[in-house]
Length: 203
Image 1 (cartoon, rainbow, N blue to C red):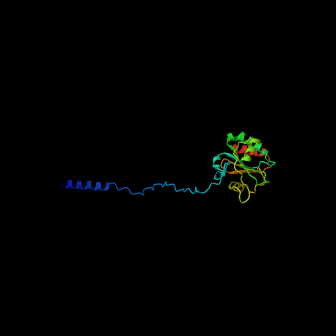
Image 2: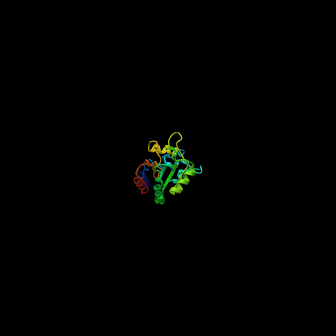
Image 3: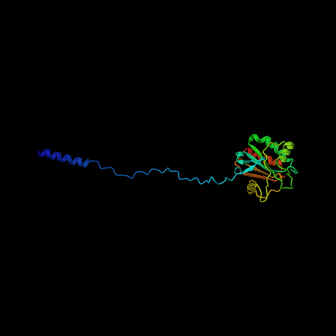
């Protein structure tokens, strides 16, 4: 009996010695924070700094958004019908015919501020341009390009390529993002203007 009791005691000691210790508790890895903390700071009420923010009047006095010409290469020209540069209409129309399929447009703004060389109303001007030069690009209502009553479009154009407009047929070249890239005075070589247009169309 004593032998049995001793045997049971020994077995109990062996079991208590071999009982596995609990595994230590390690801190659990933190779950990565995948929250996107970037903030869109764009003010969608603020006009974007491109030509598309402007509206102008067509020959009927209706408002036209220049956003209509988004993603196009644009040439903005202030024109007159009785100017020594008026024959440039021939070259302008040729460019329009040659490049319009590539996304090119000319925006024509008659202006009577230089020597009174754009007399008459829109119908008079448009009739002359279509009958004499067969223009087919968009022509808008008469505007001022200088002074306190200058068109907001021209205020913006001149802020990008500074200086008052000096005469009829000053040209601003606009890229496909609506940004002013070049300004050409009326006497600028027309071949160079064409090269600049082609360069923008090829970008």
